[in-house]
Image (cartoon, rainbow, N blue to C red; front, side, top):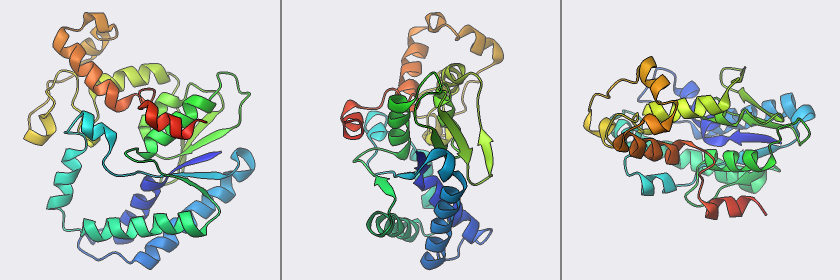
Length: 251
């Protein structure tokens, strides 16, 4: 199966359409054409080896935001300050997503409060095999968070925007380091920094190579750092998706 991170496909095509014209209105018809062409081209490219597309969609009111109020809060702030009409953009993207659901033969999955990452992570953890014996799975996304899933022998990842394969030889080590360093793009600070770091513009305490080596064993962390590690793990580790979301995918 080909697991498509639809939001990334749509946003990358939108950015390609507007280019440097940050205040131009979105041409929904052209955007629809570009997104459908991207899906069609990648299905043609990978169908023989990986099967059919499974379109994985973001929902709204993410469960992560309920657990960690600062999750992606910096993105909301950036959109408020942007010249782009994000209300019109999201309206167009939602229209296109709904049309794909209604009129195209692709399997489309959208679950209340879940992100595409949750859908992809749950399916991969359920269908992935340590020996290359299961159904081949392709993650169609440039998101480096999915490197944590590369330990399964039947799973590969391809970035459709940059047109290149993504791989990592130590997915468990990558995940541990990613949790320690946090994820600025998602508003998740490193383990040495407070919850509201990015919203308040606080400078993060740096994670040095010495710190990374020290924190390779969580028993070397003090209570505050351990607390922040668990905060970050809940946001980043795709094994920790809520059971009510997993149950809707795994039957």
